[in-house]
Amino acid sequence: MVKWRVMALERTYAMVKPDGVKRGLVGEVLRRLEHKGFKIVGMKLMQIPRATAEEHYGEHRGKPFFEGLVSFITSGPVVAMVVEGENAIAEWRKMMGATNPKDAAPGTLRGDFAATIDENIVHGSDAPETAEREIGIFFKPEELL
Ligand code: IDP
Image 1 (cartoon, helix red, strand yellow):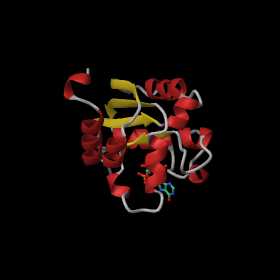
Image 2 (image 1 turned 120 degrees about the vertical axis):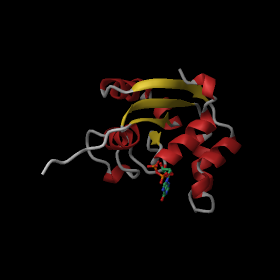
Image 3 (image 1 turned 90 degrees about the vertical axis):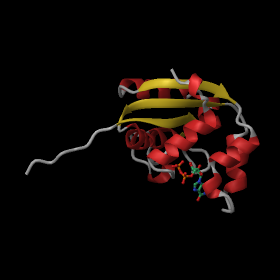
Image 4 (image 1 turned 180 degrees about the vertical axis):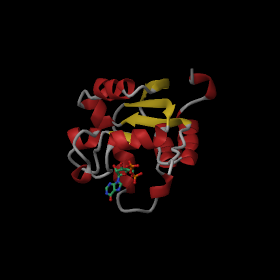
């Protein structure tokens, strides 16, 4: 039986979190994205305002780690990116590795570089609707080239 794999050209929101920027991992993240063949269509270094962080992580509001998460993500500059490629959403999530670095496979960014769930280096949208929402939070249409 022939199995068809549906490929889709997608855009996802990718971010190097403050710990990744502080630890000098921006180049490593970009290297992996470019080697994978992804196109960077938007990119900026920014300090996320608190209200933006609360909106971005809105689904976690009310959870015990929410305040810590917002404090952490606003604690220093991040590199915000829009990445385009075939199945970019799922592929970038694979490259990141599991949310908890203890479960992240070797060869993934979190598996190779992160130690704790609170500071796990990178972010990536988890679904097409999330990607659209997150890209809209961080980028104006004219910032995507
Ligand atoms: P993701 O970053 O892999 O998409 P999410 O579930 O969206 O994971 O959670 C967002 C971020 O919140 C995670 O990257 C992690 O830093 C933090 N987080 C998620 N769950 C926990 C938890 O149980 N304790 C502490 N931090 C958490």
